[in-house]
Length: 286
Image (tube, rainbow, N blue to C red; front, side, top):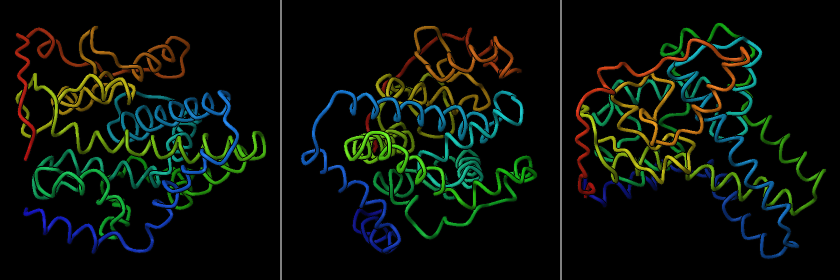
């Protein structure tokens, strides 16, 4: 798709309703007008990784791929943690991600850089009114839970409550660092899996898409950067298939399984782990 067409699509499909998204970005400038403290920076990091776990373990590996089992209480906890990321509702997210895997890098893919360009895959698609509706037909295993349906319909309630709590506890400094800065960083770290992990990195497995493995993205997103592994066997709770592939989300879920919070963690089949590792670097998509 020509770059001019992509730019036109971005402008056409990111209307005024996206202003809160950009407002959160602009609010980060307030760090220069509030007293600095390492405590506020620590809150920023804590909120980043707590909510990243909500996305990686909850929205992605559990709700989208059902790569492990848990009880209804912890299922709700994961849904709330994911909702705190301000990436729309849990059912909306899971349904769209299942569509992404069904049509990965094909015409039906919502956020393929191969089909629609880097910036559309990174941020344009999630701001577009084209994809506002939840595709309930793709998540029949999840819609039966009324608490998940409520969270999906009122996805702004948890993050707004979190922002108010940060302000009440730590004032403007905690609000700016713990919510605005942390949320902005969280957004773009997550979005880079849709965009950059299909553009830069290495390929171990010959999948039918352009997914790549990227160490730096894996460190930033608690294991999601092993994207070629994931597209090869999407139901695995481990995305770092080998011991040297750091996957912090899997480590936490494995530890939770020791105390009975999670169970039936799906592992990659041995045939994928025993094959010769021919890691091939690919050029970036133009």
